[in-house]
Image (cartoon, rainbow, N blue to C red; front, side):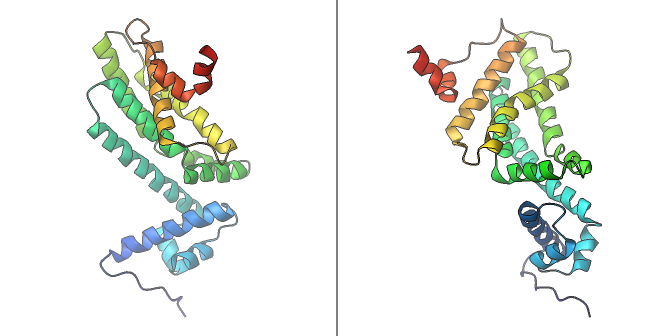
Length: 234
């Protein structure tokens, strides 16, 4: 006898609703149980659909896991695209906004929880870590590279490999706060602090690319990120 499925809500696409329900359930279970301990049966039960339906949408558990990561990446990509559409013409401001979106995404609890899952599973399943590298990062690098080329054009300096510099900018911006958040579950994610850090790292990076053309880092931004520096100098 076929497994019974819960009725879908009226007014939604039946197929889309089932797929999203499966992904929502998979997120909860992967984060709670890890990759190996999450079964397709459990995902089906949590989503309120049959196991056959789960396999109709996702061929195996690895494909399901990758789809969960891809959905997170798509959400970050959308936020970044909105940042670009709404941003001003100044490339430094554009980079600071991209940096802020990146910080918000990579220090979010769910993102960090997936990193912890991957860290535990990486030794046995290195293919899982490859999926995380696609979490919005290629698109971020592309957008940063565009902004860096525009900054170089406006300030009259040469940037030989914008993509490489963009990758460096992404790592420089996200690595420190993300590591702090991973090591401290109660780490401060104050929005004003994240914005100050985004603006400070952006100014430092651009200043390093073209020291003669870029303005000094504002003292106010420095003191917001590292308040102990202002106390030490007072």
